[in-house]
Each structure stands twice: as structure tokens, then as C-alpha cells.
Amino acid sequence: MPPSTATNPNIDATGRVHRRSFLAQYLRRPGSVGAIAPSSRHLARTMVDQVDWSRARHVLEYGPGTGAFTGAILDKLQPGARFAAIELNPDFARILQRRFPGATVVNDSAANARAICDRLGFPPAPAVDAVLSGLPWAGFPEPLQDELLGAMLKVLKPGAVFVTFAYQFGTYLPAGRRFATKIRGLFTTVDRSPLVLRNLPPAYVYRCSTAG
Ligand SMILES: C[S@@+](CC[C@H](N)C(=O)[O-])C[C@H]1O[C@@H](n2cnc3c(N)ncnc32)[C@H](O)[C@@H]1O
Image (cartoon, rainbow, N blue to C red):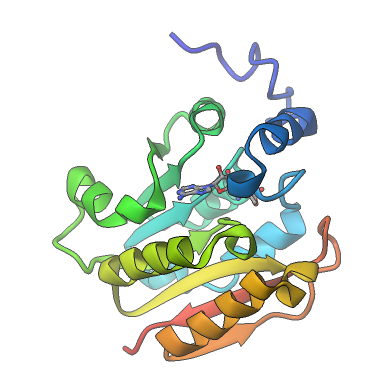
């Protein structure tokens, strides 16, 4: 039986995850964690504001980490909507499941999104209305960017949205520039938010949509 959030040393009484557990994971796996601290609630709000929740029946979160966006997503989900958070790091997946016991947390790679949707009993692909991603795209090599984007396009419905963020400094890095070029080629519309300054580091949010 996992300890409750009240007794989990990584989570305080208000449900906030200690930043040091995030930093420890970054030091162990810098390439896949891609950040030294969880995102702010301001970035979380900008992320969830990109989705029309009244129409979102099947929703995935990629790379939830310790849940910086997960609570905001769960607050927005309409009754009857299905949601799964896909997290590669087993320690983060465990923390996340303890923090949100009612949520479906899948410890796997988002590259396996289609098989995960099938396993969860989502309607036959493409069935997903929205993917909200915390993946560190600017730190990924090109083959991994391609694999993850290709797998995502197989599950997104026509008219679906893909929401992700990019640290401002990351948009100057070659992999960050390559990612921005790729999404402009793959999605029908790509909009970038104003810079969210109340996040460390400041970040943009991208809203990408498939043809409806
Ligand atoms: C920058 S952190 C973001 C965490 C959280 N969303 C936030 O904003 O604080 C990136 C997260 O993506 C996860 N991740 C990396 N590669 C992944 C993959 N292929 N599939 C699922 N999660 C992955 C990492 O383990 C980490 O939790």
C-alpha cells in the first residue's frame, strides 16, 4: 500500500511536490527530465486555457512529472471525459499517482500512445481530442522528436489540439528551432502565446491543431 500524500516525504500538506525531488531526478536523467524545477501554476493556467474543454472527451498528458499541470487538467475535465497521464520516469509516475489517486497514470513512453489508448479502452484511434505535453522537446534528438510527434499524430482526431511549452532560451537552441519548424509543418495552425514570465525559466505555450 503506497503511503498517503500526508506521509510521502516528497509531497507537503498542500499537495506541493518538494522541488528537491525534481532537481534530484534532473541530476539523474537531465536529457529526459529537461528542467530543474516543476512548472509554475501560471504556466499551467496558460496551458489548460488553450483547450476547449466542453469538447474534450479523450485527453492525454505527456510528461506530467510531479503533476504541475495535472491538477489544472483534472479541474477542467468535464464529466464523462477520459484522461491519462503518460510518464516515463517511474519515480515521477509513483509520486504523481500518490498525489492524484483517482487519475490514470501510465508509466511508459508517450511514443507508445496508441497502444496505451488501446489498453485503456479508448475508442479506436484516432480518438484523442487534446494532448497537453510537458516533454522537453528542445533537449530531444531529432529521431526522438520525430518518433513522439509521429506517434501523437496517429492518436489525434481531426480538429484536435496539441499544447506544449518551450522555454524562451530553448527556442534559440538548434533542437528547439528544429522542433518549432517541425510542428509548423505537421499541424494546420500553430499559435504561440505571449511569454509567460512567471515561470522559471520563462516559457512560451504553443497551441497546435490538426485539420478539422
Ligand atoms: C520538463 S519535465 C516537465 C514536468 C511537468 N510537466 C512540469 O511542467 O513541471 C519533462 C517530463 O517529461 C518526462 N518524459 C521524458 N520523456 C518522456 C517520454 N518519452 N514519455 C513520457 N514522459 C517523458 C520526464 O520524465 C519529465 O517528467
